[in-house]
Image 1 (cartoon, rainbow, N blue to C red):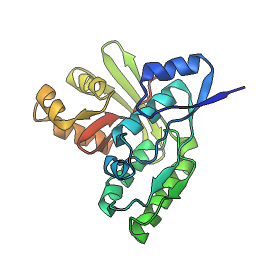
Image 2: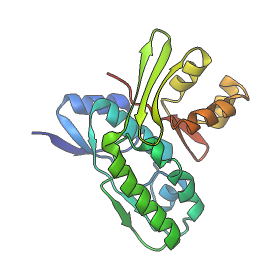
Image 3: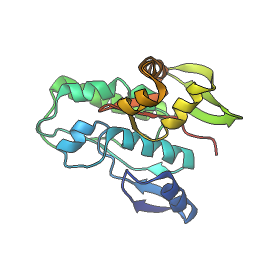
Image 4: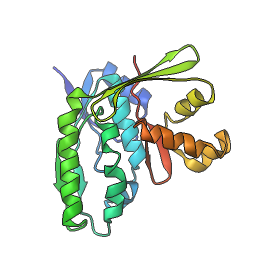
Length: 212
């Protein structure tokens, strides 16, 4: 029998691993949205990049995640959704939401239609999506086989591998710039173009489940 538990989206990888090892294989982490701005309007202290990190770590550990995409909060804007929706294809390999739930008035009808289409596409494409990273000495090898990105193998070494390791947890651009130099923004843009990172509210995190 597979046990289910409720937890916070901010739970660490180590805590998730312990939950799995004690018999919990299905989680309800309270992931309601992937936009930090919308999460604040919903009264949540969680952050968009933190929610994506949780989904990524759950995929690494083979855990099922039960969550719904909630929207329709007073004060939310179409822009907050469009930025995240453009990044949905990069997340299709991660545990999909069970659906979407409108909480009230908020975004326009056009954005709502785009959101519902994005949710449906994520759920449809998820079984065919595969993305993983593993270490090869000091280098990191990424195997990508997602419908929207094609089949690729990337090898990251030196500073490029260090950057990916630094993105295991959400990190602000200012911190990344201080550590890796002003050229880091171009590197991040390249990673986003390949669908290997997610960004929201000035933070960045990679979306690469690890081979365990």
